[in-house]
Length: 235
Ligand code: SF4
Image (tube, rainbow, N blue to C red; front, top):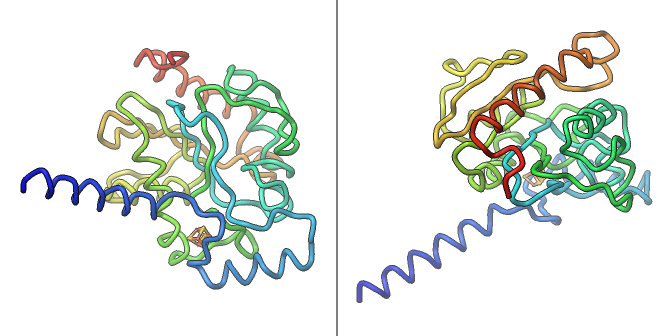
C-alpha cells in the first residue's frame, strides 16, 4: 500500500516536472504567440519559436538573459546568437574557457560550451524587447525548472535586472532583500550563488555603461566562486 502511494507521488512529481520543461510549441502568452506568428510571416527563414537553453546540460554555471532578440536568438534559435548582444558575451566566455569559439554564428557552427549553459527569463521574442510582467511570470516556470537542475556550489549569472528579478522570483525570495546591482553577489539558498551584471546589450556596451573590463570582472567573480567550490572544471 505504502509502496503504491510512493509510486503515485513519484509519477505525479515527474508529470508536474515535465510540464515545466521547455516546450517548442508553447503558446501560453497569447500576445507573444501572435507576435511569433507575425514574425514568421515577415521572416520565413527565422526560427520564430520559444528559444531553448544552449550549452552543457550538466553545467555548474548558468547564464540567464532577458529574452530572444528579434534578429538574434529569434532568428537563429540559439540564445545571444545572430545579433549584437552576443558579441561581448561569447568573446568573454571564450576568453574564460567556457566556449570553444569566440563567436556564435548559428546552431550549425559547432560551437560548444563547457561547464556553462545559457537561457533566457522569457523564451519568446517580445515586441520592442519588452515582455510584460504577466509574460515574465508565466514563463517563469520554465526558468524555475532550469534553476532546480542546479546543485550546491553552482553559480548563476543574471544579465540585467529583469533576469535578476525572475531568478529571485523563481526561488520565492523577496526582491527587496536581493537588490539588483552590477557585480552584486547573492546567496540564494541551496548553496547557489547569484551574481549580477548589466546586460551586454548594444545600448549598454556602446554607451560604456558596461565595458569589456567590467564584464570580465564579473566573469572573474564567477570563476573564483566556482574554483572555490571546486566546480570550475570538474565533471
Ligand atoms: S514566453 Fe514562455 S510561457 Fe510565454 S509563450 Fe513563450 S515559452 Fe510559453
